Image (tube, rainbow, N blue to C red; front, side):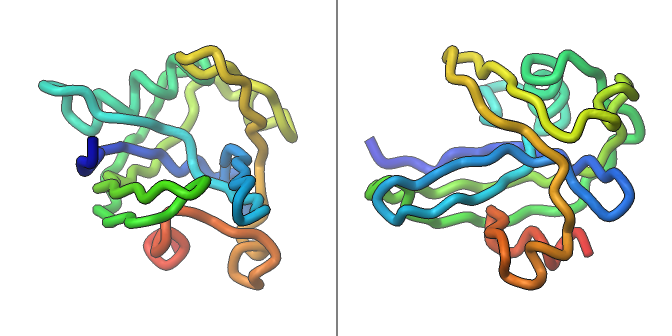
Length: 141
């Protein structure tokens, strides 16, 4: 079934770095990075969704949550076309200890383990690393 998926993500900053998860597209043989968050459920606001997702993934509340904007993300991942409307937020992790961890492994709701790390923004601007969704770097700089 083809449909547009609404998602909410949050950009957490740590000096010149942002918190992202590492993903991989095996067909393109491409490693990419995206801020944490996930799908917005029916009847749930974007703010509620991003707070729920971060609590599930990092076991932390979000402070100073601010909506930055929307992005439309049409992409191909592992050979399948996807289409998302992305609500982008900026916030501060209440669990301050997370800022001291260079990287961590977290478990998604579906049981999948993902690598989460602080990545320097310059790496995305210089083209050394790929940041999704498209347009995010411009929105947060």
